[in-house]
Image 1 (cartoon, rainbow, N blue to C red):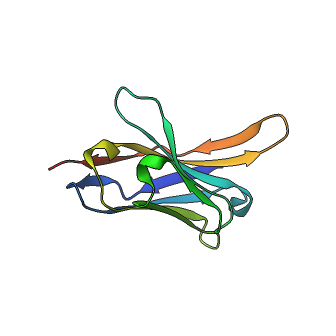
Image 2 (cartoon, rainbow, N blue to C red):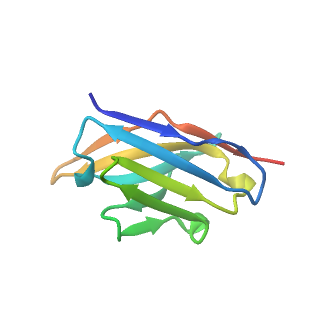
Length: 119
């Protein structure tokens, strides 16, 4: 049974930090690209950060220099370190595992964790 379980969300003041974790099970974690998405109220879900192997990472412009994605394939876990948080970062954050195939992708999703940035 495939599971992605996010943790680490919460309420933080502007300028603060949070570290999200996503523990995976039920599939070969190391073969999957791992993504963090977020969805704010009234907005579409957006891709925030991607990691393939540990040295290949990409970020949406809004979080570059503030967020860092990492993975530990021995622990089947992906992380999102979020620093200098802003109110605009408030959203539900989702972990996604993606395996690309010629005609379609295999996608697994977590249940999401709420991040609220407010004073």
